Amino acid sequence: MSQIIVENLQKTFKVARRQPGLWNSLKSVAHREYKMIAALQGISFQLNAGELVGYIGPNGAGKSTTIKIMSGILTPDSGKCEIMGLIPWQQRIEHVRRIGVVFGQRTQLWWDVPVGDSFDLLKDIYKIPDKQYEKTRDELVVSLGLQNIIDTPVRQLSLGQKMRCELAASLLHQPPILFLDEPTIGLDAVSKLAVRDFIKKINKERGVTVILTTHDMDDIEALCSRIMLIGKGKILLDGTIEQIRNKISPERVMTIDFANSPAAISFTGVTNVRGDDGRLELHFNPSVISATELINRITANNEIKDFTVENPPIEEIIAKMYSEFKI
Amino acid sequence: MKAYLSIIKLRFALQLQYRAAAFAGFCTQLFFGFVRVMVFHAFYFSSVVIQPLSLQQTVTYTWLSQAMFRMLPWNGDAEVLKLIRTGNVAYELCRPINLYFSWYVRLISLRIVPTLLAGVPLFIIALFFPAQYGATLPVSVLAGLAFVVSMTGALFLGCAITNIIAISTLWTVAGDGVQRILPAVVMIFSGSIIPLAFFPDWSQPVLRFLPFSGLLDVPFRFYTGALPPSELFPLFLLQIFWIFTIIGLGIWLLSSATRRVVVQGG
Image 1 (tube, chains in turn brown, orange):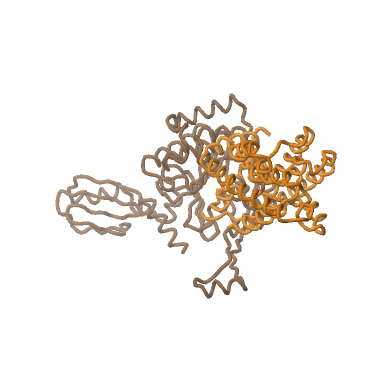
Image 2 (cartoon, rainbow over the protein chains, first blue to last red; image 1 turned 90 degrees about the vertical axis):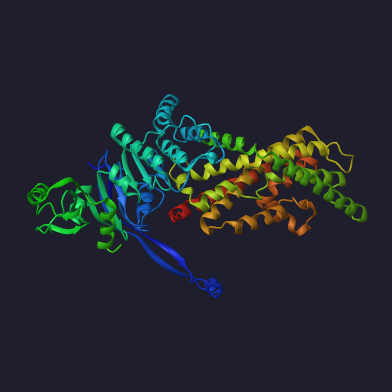
């Protein structure tokens, strides 16, 4: 039985439209033009407990809309969404008790008071028993390294510190499901790593189901066992990183450092050869020619110093997917 | 219930930080209090008609309104308005708590704290001004009690009206519209500018029935003895009627707004 069931979800926004300029502003007073924007056009998927899913797609694809529907904020036009047996927008209060949400571009902490006060308030809002609250809070403080900032007013925190506090705030009530909407947006490398490690940890150790939207492909590569690609309000791909990689671009890249000047290389399965005399970059399809066979054939005629085999970077895959689906 | 109390507590602590604002408010209210008292003096001494309130009653009423005007629904909670405008309201919507009342209780401290910080000291000082220029104590203990009860009703009524300002922001985005119209209406019809007793006779039944009289005029008339304490019961019932009506309206507006809510940006 899936923990999260989404079926054929649809949502359209009505947006007031106006051409720029004073004359058009005046015109729009008398007559308003609206444009219907179909944010979601039939989204379906199912998630099991304990999955860590990357929900990706370009800006405006409908990622945040889906997250907002699943967290009970928005009501869809039609379709089904059942999370642990509840319909988010109908049984909002019971539902939100069991989920944690972080919107990377917003804040849930009270700006002018120390972080700890915001946590205490959440304790009362979620009616967390004292003992359980203290234990969870202390664990979160340690694993997110908040010891020195919990007494600081939020307005004085850096973005990275704030995001770690947001994560802690979303987990105080120990939700089995966590929605993260761009949790690494704007963070520096160190903070990103800290956030990533933490997400991985709570998923592994506590079995929290995590749905993560992001534009940072390193997040995806480091965290997600499964990816859902959304574009123009539809799910275009759903699978593991490997599956998607193979589907979009089965190519591997072999980089070879030669000791001699190599002769021209052309084998079936090798699609692209780049580089200067000493170093060559070969793109090859492992289902046509395996890496071992390729290197055997090359070493038969050449002397090589070193070689590596890599998957194409995930950025390239994603860029390729976006252009392939024209989104 | 505990969650609401915690929100009030946190807001109280926050509001107590604004001491400079309270002091500035105190000075402004003191100055304009004198101006208004002088205007009433000029009015009383140049008029031969018998006025509905005695000069001393009017002066006390004026100082009360200077001290208590922060209890009026004259502004929205800046933080709630910001939540809505920036879309942070998304977080409010994913809490297991009633949104209407979580805003409502914030307003209680928005009204009480500045009144305690600036209004109450102002009124105490006004008690020491010379007769006819300063305020007096309530005309009797019962009048004082009636004032307290009626003022409590005024607090809850004021918060219900203020919440309408916040909720209207969900519909109009900017929220300035209601935010600007409502205070003007409130100031005039609550008796904050001129005591309602000075309005034309034909308008009295309407003014008395409107919710705004319960914000200021009714408690002040108990205090100054213009109304006998025995009138408390029906007038308190009227306040309660309006409190429930306006809270009901707010809840209805909020629930229809959240059904069509669009969270701004990202």
